[in-house]
Length: 176
Image 1 (cartoon, rainbow, N blue to C red):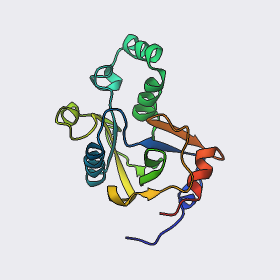
Image 2: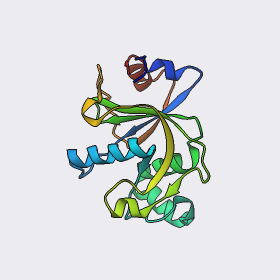
Image 3: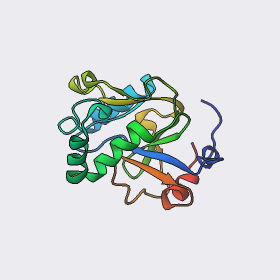
Image 4: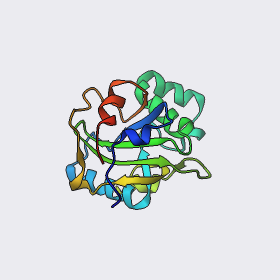
């Protein structure tokens, strides 16, 4: 593994990054481990909400998107950000809960920029909406980086973290 460095090194020249939870919901610890191993080994990040978003986000009708926006506004934001606002070279940090980090990487340029792969969630391998990343650091699940300060209040699956906010400050002091 390369030399250890502070996360703040990755923030240089940026005014935001993406913070993403591995998963919550009904996943067991073993499920999270397997999903992270898949993400790490295949250079992916992903999310899904199979009942509400059962196809490519950009193929959903405006009415379907607006229904999600009114019923589950956070998830509407997650899908808009993940499918349409993440850009190549954007920094993404993967958290496991409020207390640890699993990886840090950059969104990789790819065509299409994001993909829908229902087969991944049907086989319980990974999430069905995916993006390619290049991992700068990707820990083994059992060797995740413990945070000195909890990410209290990070209750979303995906969040754009702007410079000089609380999560920016907390993560800038972490050494990988």
